[in-house]
Figure 1 (cartoon, rainbow, N blue to C red):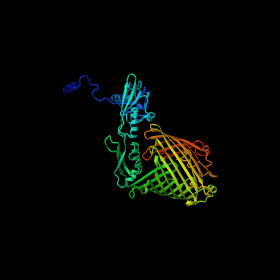
Figure 2: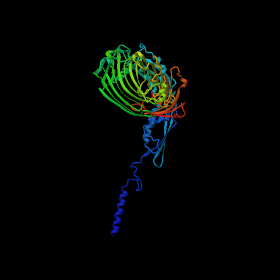
Figure 3: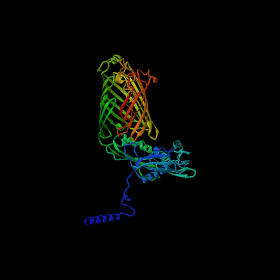
Figure 4: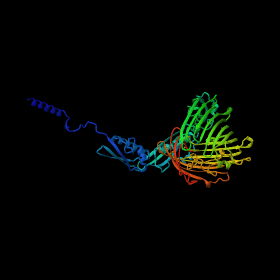
Length: 615
């Protein structure tokens, strides 16, 4: 009886539980309100893109994409998110001049809830530029844009894009800002014809009044004198207003390394005023700073550097530097004192001294030197300098075959007393990674007997560098050429080893070991030459984010005399490498090959690890 009663209670409980289930859902079915398992994106293919590269199309997607590495987990997938990205792509295509683009998605899902997506893109016909018209609101304004025609980023017949249209407006605005019209305004209109797929561009330009530089007010400095700041300004009062000169003035002030912040801005005045006053606001840098660095190279191995800089020493913008360097082949301790604008003049006084240790393949050199120079900034960005240097060199570890050739004894000290002149022109746009401009370095020395020199000679070295932006600051062609000349005078028969020219190695012809090129003694030890020719060409290009690639060709050689210099005797090297951009400069790895080896036993390649650009 009890068993029958319990069976009846259990049956009633089950019937009640089933009755409580939602309508249309059986006991064996899942709840439709329950969350569905997530989908994952296995692959995404772009089909049909031709005018716009697929890689560029993929860069516009903001949804997570599958990794190229098979062991990475696929990202989550949402159809709603895919539709948002399709809308984004259509807007992107409109900005590129395609106003009839159609994009359809096809989705396939496997049993593991992984999705294979395809975007089928029909770009449609592009919109081409039918006309470009420039209207100047003030006919009296003497504005001539003819010099800009060759620089137009878009021309009649080109595909219309928003970027080139904006660049066209910026080109005209920059021209006005740099030619006396700081109040200029450039407006544009684009008339689209959907049937003909053409665009008519109309620029309306209000140049405003022709303006000139007014007075300059200086704010924020304490120890740096006004005249030192004013002499770095690239503009003068009453000159035609030019924003390029404002930016150049800012760069000049930063180069002094006296200020942590420099701001040069026009003061607010009525638009009708012809003279524009400017405010220069500077914040002085810390009085003392310590810098250091640690690196490694294949030839000099461990590199270490430690420096101390004292700014505004005694006021007047004076700078005192101490620096110590160490490497396997080149170590030094040096000091330098700079007094800018000596006695209120336009000349900078630089006094330096140092102790240097050089361990080169064919000899060692211990150097004690002192130098005094005057530097002056000339027009066109040229810096000229001249001065006097006295230097004591003590050579050692000279191979016997080299001693016989030069009739020199070990541990001899040479005194060089010389006068020098030089100039430097730097138009490069960046110190760490230049993309445009170039550099010219010229230096000449004379060490006659009447200056008290034990070694009598004249020497000159000229180096030119050029940086060409081949495409959007990504593909850069860097070139370099060097000529060195050295001539003994006043009875000096042979120039000592430490003064001669050497080439080969990481900073010259990279396919050869350090100083391997040029004249040698009977045992094959390098002895340097009295003349030098070097040249390099390097293509720099992006690889991934801050990683850059390089491909290079180097040429060079040293010759016994100036008259024996022969470009047909140059040795060539080529190779490739990688550069990773860091705040301290590019860290590089190069693999270089000699193209015309000197000896069969010579290494067939050279590997270099460096910090900084080769040139």
